[in-house]
Image (tube, rainbow, N blue to C red; front, side, top):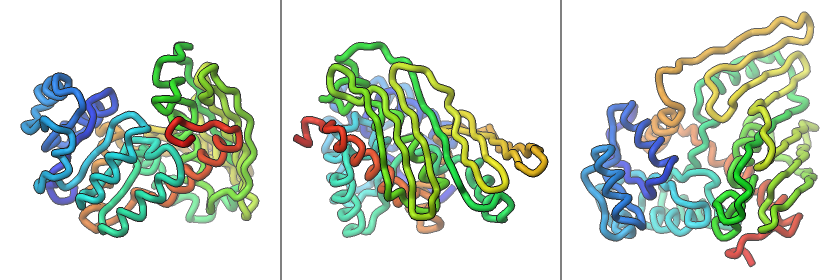
Length: 325
C-alpha cells in the first residue's frame, strides 16, 4: 500500500457498501461520508465506523483533510461532483460509467490536468492481477498478433420503466450500466482505439438502450464484437483471439483466473491469482499508488476511449439523455 490517504465517499448505495467492505479488508475505513440523505449517511457511517458525516454534501470539497474522493452516485450526477472535487484539488475515482458522454469527460480531464490531480474510473478490469499476468504472456510474443475479441454481458432486469436501468432521467440503459465493462475488456486488449464502429440497438419504451450489438475495428485490423442486454442473460465471458491462441476470461469484470489455449496443439494453460482480497481492493491500491506518484495503472486513456465509443453509438441511434438535449 501507498501512504495513508484520507478517502471521502459520496453516496451510500450498494456499490459504496462494497467499497467500504473492501476498505475494511485493507484495515481501512473512509475518513468521511457525504450523501443527499442524512439518515442513510448516518446508518452507513455507523455500519462502517466512519467518524465524519457532512450535513451538507458540498462540505466534502472544502474539507482540507480529504485527499481522495470516491463518487458512487447515479451516473448523471457524476460530472457535477467530479468537477467540484477536481476544482478543490482533490483526487477523484468515480464509479462507472464515469460521465454521461465524452464531452463531459473531456471537460473533467482538462480540469484534472489543470489542478495536477488524479482522475480515474473505478473499473475493476484495469486492476485485477490476472490481467497483468495475461499481459506478460502477450508481451512475450507467444500468442502473436491480436485478431479478434468477443465479449458478452447480459442480465435480466425487471421490465419496470421507472427503475434506474431503463429510466432516462437516471441515465439508464445497457451501455452505461453494463456495456462499460464489456467495452473496457475489448479496449484493454486492443493496441489502439477503434476508428470504425457499427452498431444495432433495441430501445426500451423509455428510449434507453435495452440491447446493443457493437462491431469495432482499428487501423491494425483488430476487430471486436460486443453484445449487451438488460433483458437476456448471457454468459459473462470475454475472449481475445490471437494468431497462435486465444485467451478466455470468465466473470471478466472481477476475474481471478483465465485460460490460454494454443492453436498448434490445443493445449491449455491456466492462470490463477490470489483470491484473498475483494476485487475492489485492487482499485484502492492502484488509486493510492497513482496519487503517490509511484505507478499509475488507472488507465484513464482507456476510459476516454470507451466513453467515446459509447457516446458515438448512442448518438448514432439518436439516444440522448435529458441533459444532452
